[in-house]
Length: 294
Ligand code: MG
Image (cartoon, rainbow, N blue to C red; front, top):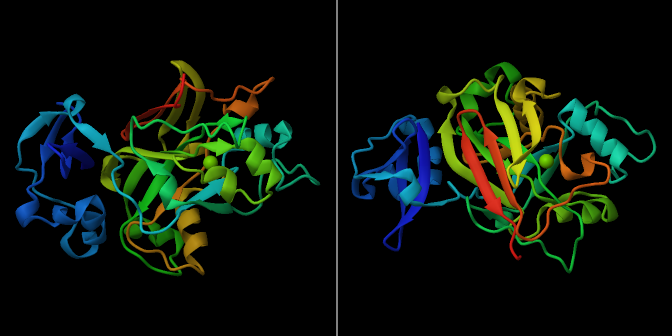
């Protein structure tokens, strides 16, 4: 099941996407847990199950005004340097202030940070390039895990029981701020720096161990990876995070980006006003956002 949040006639609605027919079926909020939006559906998943009745009117998906599928109640958990080739390109870029001494290409343990909830935007919403703050705006296409059942001390082999599904996140980054402030939060949490969507997809729809992750800038393919190449796979990330942090339904974990980001090029190829970034993952759709300005 692919859930979308969209605006129709001035109101926010929840719908189920039929990807093959490219139709959105509205959920009748009057007698459905969809009244709490997609987050409400995710939070009630543990008690009512993953299915909802999509009996509403059908609208072509290209005719609806899609929004971010939902806003998690707390920061988006993120993982840095979780693909080998990206870890190498980052180490060699000179922008990695987290490992200046050893130049360790591959981390021994997952590197966690967060992005503020307030940085989330939906498909099509312009990314603010914040020109007064940064001159090194970069993109990172990533698989994001959506937690459905909370818990702590989740064993890796039980992680699937806690995962509602997946979506796409573009972990937009101001590289100069990331480097200057050492800790990554600031450079990755500026307003509009977390495009998310276009859909929230239940786990049964995809094989998370084998999903192509691609990113285009102005139609040029920049990133091409596969979730099978994650250094720390999804069960490991859930287990590691939950060992001491109780995960909650609706928590989102961005799993890291493959090689091909702007700092991976010589010279670096940063984003500028008017550029268009499209992140695509098998079965999860394509998340496209322009950079504001011309
Ligand atoms: Mg990232």
